[in-house]
Length: 263
Image (cartoon, rainbow, N blue to C red; front, side, top):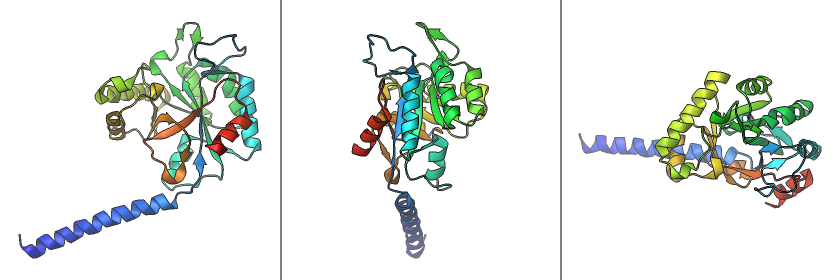
């Protein structure tokens, strides 16, 4: 091949790389500089126990959750879904001025029994990350969602169902390929019972990840990965590094807003 042809090929490659970089920068700069807090809840109880082995970090009351929703809505927040975030990220839609996302981990039956009616009452969206091996089970007197519960909530248009793994273990101690197979199996079960899922999000149990697991899931069809504590900024959002705020027992809506504003 002549030197002239090599030079032309080299210049074409440089042009393509500059175009890709410029386009990515354009998309980056186009995104609004807005916070996207994602709230994390777990199980719900009607009576708060006198003591709790997890220091009341993973239980809450339906009354407290409803107060949180009312306070957030009353202070100008718009509760959006992960699908809404995905559409905004890809440029299909725009975000509201004060977006916020509500999520629940593990797939407790209390999410259906107590929280789903509140979501319907206020017409707000939420995402539930389920442990597929626990669906339909009752473990240590704690009841988990059934597939029928999940399907009903998903069909309402208010609730998204995503993967929180099959077994809920420390996946940073496993090979990335074990995690890949686990997440594939969890979504196989989700799609078997709930239909095809156009958006796939994975929340790491315990927030335990490695750089290898993140790369592996990114390359195997997972659109968003959730595994850290904090608040997201849309302008700099990395779909493979989504952060949330854990809401402990009886944290008020005003306290949530203060944490968002002061973060």
